[in-house]
Image (cartoon, rainbow, N blue to C red; front, side):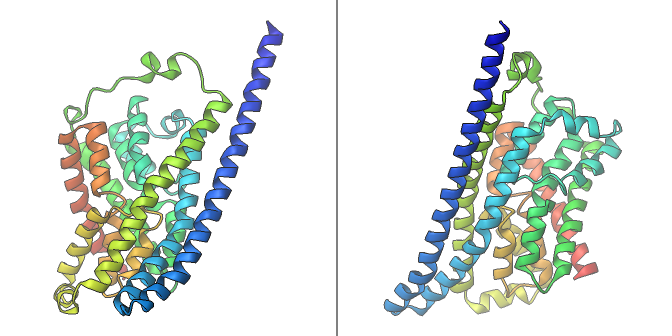
Length: 349
């Protein structure tokens, strides 16, 4: 019996090592492929556009390529870190670290986003898992909003996208954290469990009730998380970069002047644009930096709103928490995020 258990443990360790090596190979091959594609696109794209005698297309390609090339490394880093946390950090760790008082748990959960990176796509299932394990909904929702908005990868990417504006990094941190905490406190005061579907603990029906995860299972979950998050978020990065480049090239200057001339209209326009573009939080700073015609406060609103409210997040929240919750929560978050951006922009920028 002991020999069988030792053989099973050795086999599990060997499987984990093979999966780890395979995940590393996938990451290296994917990174090399992205570098080759970005290099070829950056060299041949403008040349092809100029050969077609379309300077506007050349300008579009230059903006598009610059945004994608700058954003892809941070997108890859963010998805790797997010997948590692999801695969190797048990959810009960969060519950043990949070105070029992909801009012105190909300800012602690919001601040946890600074040290626990995660993309917005992964934050919804993580928040759902935390609620299933007994974490107060207010704290889980605060973490859902803060993790993709203020984690180290996002802040470093913002500092590189705005190299001469360190106040933009501070503004994003303060405005995003304030939005997450305010929304958590609003849930404590006005939220109702009726807006959420009945929670069912996984200990009675899920994997945890049957057997713990093995090392091989965790490495397989990590690999699957990296592949899914990178491909999923990378598609939104490409679409968002193309939309930003098109916005810069196609929209007439007279139309932009109508918005950029009014600080309120410019903030509202980019706040709505963030909802529609669905750019991943690891790369949205580069898209915001490319929108140079807008005020710093408007671009701050773009970066604060995007990781918290966009079309894909509304769809994910609808499928996880129900349509009634998703629309009400998203609408309230959008208002609070815009207000926080305006206040921080007025104070800091």
